[in-house]
Amino acid sequence: MPTDTSSYPVVFVGSGNLATCLAVAMRDKKIPIIQIFSRKATSAKALASRIGCAWTNDPDKIRTDAALYIFAVRDDVLVETIGKIPPNGGLWVHTAGSMPMDIFGDTVNRYGVFYPMQTFSKARPVSFHSIPIFIEASSASDGLLLQSIAACLSREVHFLSSEQRQQFHLAAVFASSFTNRMYAIACHLLERKGLDGRLLLPLIDETAAKVHDLPAVKAQTGPAVRHDVAVMKKHLDMLDHETDLKELYRLISRNIHG
Amino acid sequence: MPTDTSSYPVVFVGSGNLATCLAVAMRDKKIPIIQIFSRKATSAKALASRIGCAWTNDPDKIRTDAALYIFAVRDDVLVETIGKIPPNGGLWVHTAGSMPMDIFGDTVNRYGVFYPMQTFSKARPVSFHSIPIFIEASSASDGLLLQSIAACLSREVHFLSSEQRQQFHLAAVFASSFTNRMYAIACHLLERKGLDGRLLLPLIDETAAKVHDLPAVKAQTGPAVRHDVAVMKKHLDMLDHETDLKELYRLISRNIHG
Image (cartoon, rainbow over all chains, first blue to last red; front, top):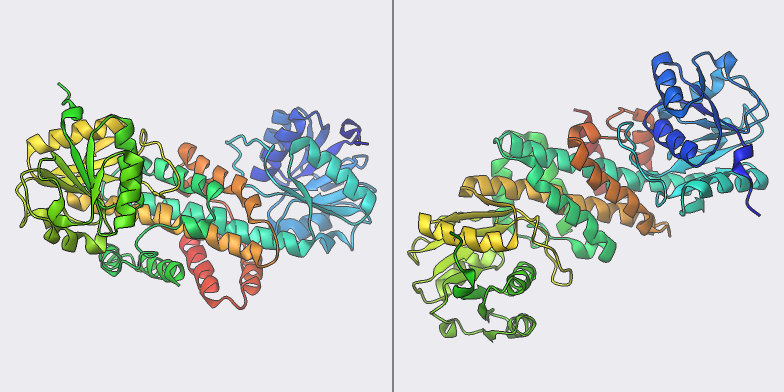
């Protein structure tokens, strides 16, 4: 039987890109968010006013009666942030792909992970419906609680171990962060010559759409997969003064050709 | 006044991915394709039967009465292919991003380029409507003829010099070929651990969709742009035995962080 998630009040610790997108999505699903905590008052206040809830930048004023505490802060300040917040009886989860669940182990008894695998920007609303949410919990009952909440947002909820989640995070860096960098380089190469980078959008869209139908290895096109040495040489010449891009071009081409 | 393209019969030289997608799109727009030539009989025959036209694998049997000859072959056999075909009075164009227009100059008097910037696979139909088609011609009147034909297929027809087109082709390698390789690596990293690569699709889609709204440089997320050294170190450890991927990870991360 599904848990009634409206009876599980949530506190957000963090107010960045992921916190903002997740809090908005939860609010839309009537999951009660009662407070936003962030070290930065302006950022806490901005998200609280979007959600219509209280906010604080004082860790000692964080509500102790919430059911769920979602730590959505940068990975490199997560441990430090956990240490600053007075322990309570709620379920504490983080949203970080690369951090193990047990970083909470010394602080609280009930903990877990709630990792929506997506690229988030504050200004851009995203639909959570198809975003995989990877969950993990220190007890079976808290696992079910997280599952109920995640299932309100997405049809792709999966229990994963910390190690499996880290694999997804590593893969996501290639599939999204590095992919976006390829877009940025492509734009730069055009704009430095006064050409319109937006003309790449249909190509970018089709490249993404294609891997819904074909495995990426089979969808591969371009000079490297054809081992077209003349074109690759010409491209390297065109990158003449951009040593880093030349090295990248060489390395990725070699990786494609094998 | 638009040219009546139905009175301009077309011969295709080549029957690969691009030739197939372009010939199908032209046939759908009632542009008359009268013959497919390819060195490979099976491939010429397959495309001809899709289009409903004649085919040949003998260069001396290529029709001499077509208005337009579209050379859609691999860049590295283009010059050789041009040399094998008896010259005639038609307009000869190639579809290669990286090849200059004047490779035809010693062979025929009327020539040009017709480069649809997209990633093509035979099995996957694509809509040409939003694909940029970059054209160039040895005379103004043949430029207008190419423009009329391209405008039947796409709303994005642009006259570009060979040098500008080469810039687009180089950018396209980053935006599509290298991007697709990032997808392939991401899938590989999951599949080697028995995890489902298809769970990356929503992330891949959103990463592509985002750059319609934000410049790629602003859309950048991931550990490198946050300069999250601990996460990057963990990822490099996870890539332990894959030396090439480690090097790629390091180089792209450095390129992101600057």
